[in-house]
Image 1 (tube, helix red, strand yellow):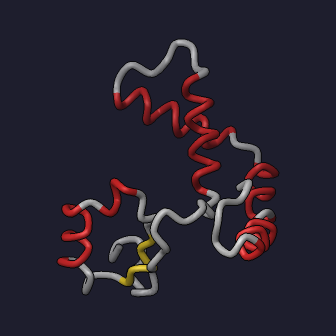
Image 2 (image 1 turned 135 degrees about the vertical axis):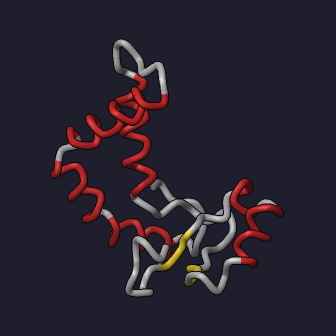
Length: 115
């Protein structure tokens, strides 16, 4: 965090998925809580982070590669290539979807949404 946000303004966010809320992860967060600010997120809340959509698009693109990446370095190269191929308009659409996502979440009082 200190490398990415040397100004001290960065916040760590995690979605409290079961694996992220394990005893080990929780203990680590508690031990390092003075190193960064932690944005608290309701457990198992609907996914509102557009990075999940981007991750899914990258996973889909990698799975459709022929030949598939065989080594971690191959995967890294393919991911960088696919990242550069993501259309800017796709990314902009995701950003512009945020008001609708938040409105849908408010409508269902924090319950499941179509996002």
